[in-house]
Image (tube, rainbow, N blue to C red; front, side, top):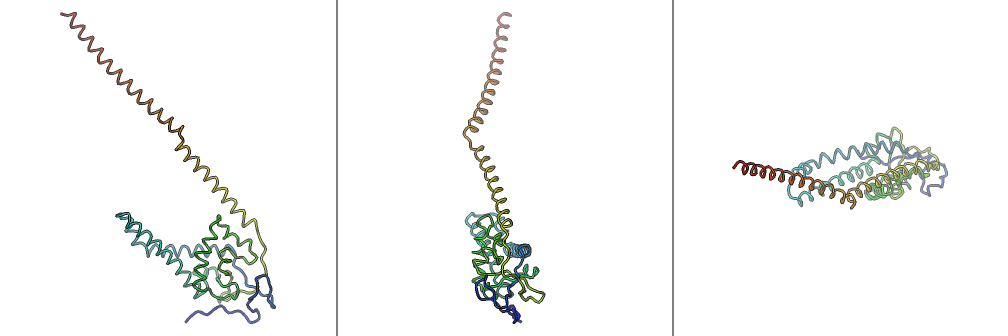
Length: 260
């Protein structure tokens, strides 16, 4: 039996106007929490990674077996292509048919259009999962944390695809007793990004210092001098040995002359 679109009680009509404009009934969907979305994303990532690994494992064995570099490059590209197809296909199927992936089913969440609360089209799924999430991760994942700055709890990829992530009840129906606007929490949005940025800068400085130390001309000169000093010591030792051998030879000849 084909799944139906989410049903909204007649007493709470769906909003079609701007997000901050209340409907006559003043009813708004309840948005999923950041923690719920995070747990759902982890579950989905685990499923997609495991599925991709199993399906693309023959290519992995062929790559590990070695061979022509060009062929390996083609196999790696094919492997990545298969994994992307699995990723996109997974979300297209579940979001267009059920409105929720397996992870979101566990957390009782649905991804719907922000204007009519209906399921997404395949094009919107691609826009959200590939384009939108790529943009969300560009600036130290600020797009994901923008959830806390949005009055409708939308990340950047939600805003790009015009979607909401809403809570559902046990029957899968959208909960419609949410607030008109959620409180903005800048600390939760910018503090993690700031910490991550500082950590990234520190790692960049340490890595850069290590590279500079490795290629520093002064260090190279010092290493060359050490090598030269060691070689000189070896030459001196060889000369001493040769000199000692010659001296002994002379002493033996001299003794023989006196004996004669």
